[in-house]
Amino acid sequence: MDKPKSRWRLGKNRWIVLALIIAGIIFSFVFPPARPIFEVIPEPITGVLFTLPRLGPISLTNTTFTLAVVSIILILMAFFVKRSIKKDTLIPGGFAAALDLLFEYLEDMTASTAGKWAKAIFPFFATIVLVVVLSNWIELIPGVGSIGWLEEVKENGYPTIQLASGVTSLVTPANPSGVGYQVVPFMRTPSTDLNFTLMLALVSVVMTQVIGFRAQGGKYFTKFFNTRTLFTKPLFGAIDFLVSILEGISEIMKVISFSFRLFGNIVAGSILLLVVGSLLPIFLPSMVMMFEFFIGLIQAIVFGMLTMVFMSMATHGHEGEEEAAPAGENG
Image 1: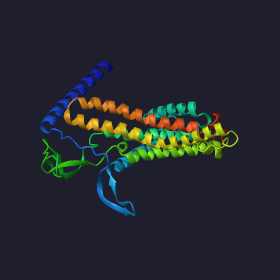
Image 2 (image 1 turned 180 degrees about the vertical axis):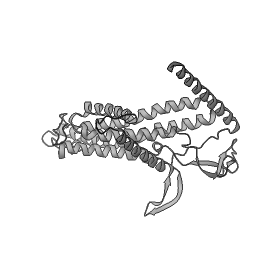
Image 3 (image 1 turned 60 degrees about the vertical axis):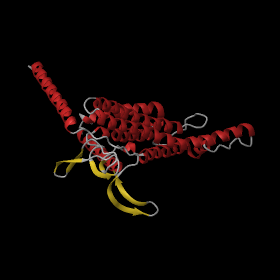
Image 4 (image 1 turned 90 degrees about the vertical axis):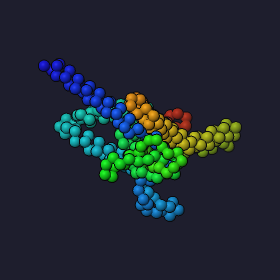
């Protein structure tokens, strides 16, 4: 009895998918998609909220609003995970079980790399992965980047059509020389905002120095200003001093490389989705979205893993030995 029922359900789902494909084809011909203009700078979606001295007026941008949505999703995830854990067995179920597998994988990776400092490093690693992967995946939700305010432009604008009361859509073709409209989306992927990626990079690099100081104490900073052998062994001491200066420069450059690596990859993917969705709106965007799904996951894991590895390296002395952890750090 179960087998025919499963076949009937599968056949029904196929008809639903086929109906959605046909509806998408018809809709793409009735309302051809307008080619969006991607702005690197995040667009404000509200008026001036307040004014800060020397910084000027502050408004809510679409990337900041999306980051707030991501934060709410993380809080709701934590709430549902806590509710799904059975108090008598402490065994997670459902969605929590999937997250438990992810955290277990990340924790094992951290333990194999950081050793006794894994408990101090793992929260940063896991948090960065969760925040970045949700920030990257949110662009796959329909409406993100395509629903927003209409802004009047003097060139390359689109005419509009009234779909319903208070709902307006752009229609093609664009008017290259006349007044038209473009969409300022309510939500945009936070990773396409250099402020977001720079903030993550600063947190990563600064907390790496904190972990290194906790592991080695004041000796850690000789890594960036090594004068221990400058006078006893002038030649080798001078080389060690120059190497330490380069170490300090490399730490600063990590902020730039971290922020631009994530920013560049996600911006490229967002532009690809927008362009492909406007040129070939029927089948190809689904393939590109699947590609972006894995790119968003890989970039999140790479960003978090680099942070974890650099923090682990910071717990080791200049000669390579691992410093003893203070009380309470041993697992």
